[in-house]
Image: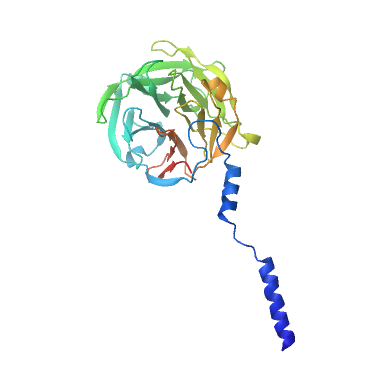
Length: 315
């Protein structure tokens, strides 16, 4: 009997010593921090929290392909569909509720053939101007055959209501060859636009669009190439420049990356800085991202109606 008891006690001690103890919250946080490095010396969050469900992509946005937070109307987001849809922009809130539909005019029907709207940005209509404009990137080119692409510009409406509005067409070409570009960003201080191309071997080529004007075909200027550490991710599908100009979010089909540089005033400075991963959800056909106006949160959308809209805030 004594021998049996001794064996039982020995077995209990062995189990206690070899059973894996659950990780402490501190250990989990440390692991997350290693994956998502803290931001130092730049406006906004030092560390981000977990993506949370805040709404759903509405039915009218079955191919949502861009998001931009209004600078004029608190809580309003401007968005649009991808190719093959009406020439429209929608105002929604973060839950996905549709607030208004803008029907766009000013483009001849023949010039709307092949329309492929890929991203949207909001910012000054011109450098130093208080008035804000919406910018739509008709830059999609899956087969890289379009000799000329364009940006559409129109003033941000004074009221969030259904309206029909004319646009200005700002055409441009690339200096090397046609590119497929699904990301548009705007420098908040200068109103300078740039596109980031969708590449199979990098996060994209960055092209500045200096000198855009109606009736003039501008040649884009190549600023550089964006790559992740180890070049492990490709094909940027949407981007958003922080209100400070010191952070840049890059969305791919699988992850979200951020470029950070304290004191950056131009894209040339920012894009030569380290690229780090930041929190993101798993979404089907993930093609939309924007900063919210406070610069402490970002919102992510998908190209399929009914998919979750996610928000990421500071931890």
